Every structure is written in C-alpha cells, then in structure tokens.
Amino acid sequence: MDIEIVEAEIGKVVEIEETIHMWQMPFVMGKDYDQLYTYLKSADCESDEAPYARYVGIDIAAETSQGFFGMLIDMIFKKWHFFAGVPVAKELEGEKRIKPAFVEKQKYIQTMHKGPYHKVGETYKAIYKWSQEQQLELGDQSIEFYLNDPRETEKKDLETRVMVQVKP
Image (tube, rainbow, N blue to C red; front, side, top):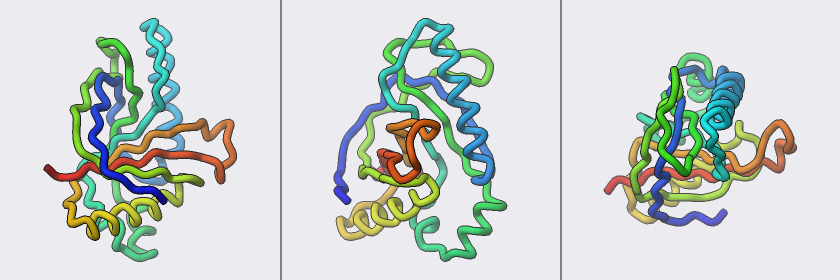
C-alpha cells in the first residue's frame, strides 16, 4: 500500500450533510448521490470528478484501536457526521438540502483502498500506523473518493482514494 502526504484543495463542491448510523450508509449515500447528480443535470453542470464522503469530527486513533465488539457497538449505535458531495467546476446556488461549499487546501495522508467498503477500516489502520511512524498528528476529517460505481463494479474491484487530514 503506497501512502503519501499530499496538499489538496478540493475546491468548489455541492454537498448534502448527514448524521446517520453506519448501517444506514449504503441506502442514504446512494439516495444522496442520486439527488446530487440530478441537481447537477438540472443546473447544466457536469462533473468529471469522483463523488466523495467527507467525514468530520472523527477520532482516527480511537476508531482504529477498538476491537471487534467496539466496532459492532459503533455500527449499531454511533452516528457518523459526513457530507456526501461532488466537486464542481462552477459555483452553484444549491437547493433544499444540496448546499454549495468550498473545501480549502489542506495537508492529507493519502492512499488507495481496493475492495469492499466494509473493509476500509483496514486502510485507516494503515494510515494511522504510518502517521505515527512519521510523527504526524491527524486531524478530525477524512475524505473518501469513490472512483468507480458499486452498482457496476464487483466489490473486490472497488477503488476508494482515502485522504485523512493532517493537523498543521
């Protein structure tokens, strides 16, 4: 697994904010992306960029150090705060739950996760371990870019670019 430090500005985006349980994510995220792409079409704005989920308020150290039962409890009871979004080339006004935003330039630890989404925790563990070896302190945000469509791609072939914020 290649892990690197990058500085990236996601730039102009449209997003839908959510706070939900992990077990709700597949349904809710699918609905959110459908709404976002329907909105982009109605706004005559296409995006060549991959859709993403921008997780906020997370503690990577705590999340990656818990055992099986901790993860199971989190899956059932913990609510995750995130933004389902799509980068866009032009500024848009948004509508209803779809809000325009600008994701500023930040430093991230980045790597690729290949395989099913439910195993992305292994990638976060590798990022956390690498950050400790490099003596880097992680921020409380991560972004997952979904590089192929789970409706058209076998789970084993899914590709997700994972970026975890580094504290300045």
